[in-house]
Length: 248
Ligand code: NDP
Ligand code: 8X3
Image (cartoon, rainbow, N blue to C red; front, top):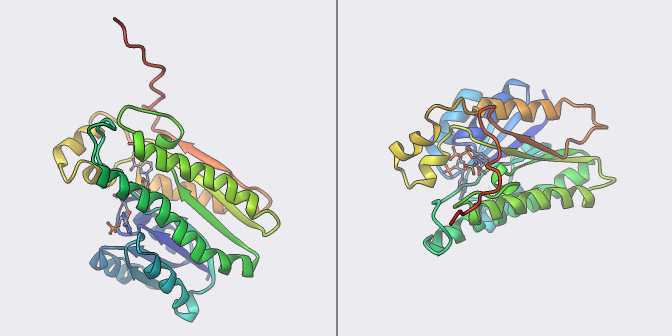
């Protein structure tokens, strides 16, 4: 039996797939998300899983949950900062400021809460592996990507800087920046409009959540001397848009 893997946003998509893959690989799982019934179902299926039904934006809830972990889940070896979302794809002038705030609070501040809560455990154990879910949207601009892409650019730069801070501790950090993947992501982005969400994936052999889980496992299985700084993974059918020119 391996140590514990703490996965935020484990009720859906990547987080759910990563929890399942790492559980299969022998890790105990801590699964965090807001939808308690999904977490309970996951824990029932996996066994050896501690659930935290909490909003990642709730600083006190996150810190208290880590402080009060059951004894046998305190050996956190892996933290997957995955909880996150995009809301809307309008131009900045048309987009809602509340949506901007939710993305900043979740994708940036929430990620900082779980990282700060878990880091002392890893530094004390002098080992650990932190995965931060960024996005191609944080590496490359696209129309309507504005604040979502901005939060993911933060994730990239913070991951690099965290690596610097952790030099000498043996703790590894990887930013995973996926392109198009079919999860509940677009349904959330488009306010539950399933038809609009499905249209995003039409005619594309998109990346699956299981592919992302496999990337996590591949990184974990590299010799400890190797730190994969960033994995940017696009669907074979996806590429950069190129520089757009407005022709008169
Ligand atoms: P999903 O919508 O399927 O899953 C998002 C997960 O994040 C859910 O488990 C959700 O749990 C959790 N979450 C969202 N807000 C909160 C919150 N406030 N508190 C706790 N948990 C929260 O999307 P994905 O699996 O696709 O997304 C996972 C990550 O990957 C995100 O950070 C996303 O930005 C990133 N990503 C996704 C891509 C894609 O194309 N799918 C591509 C690149 C990056 P719950 O609602 O139960 O709280
Ligand atoms: C999700 C990928 O391209 O929809 O982060 O922003 S994208």
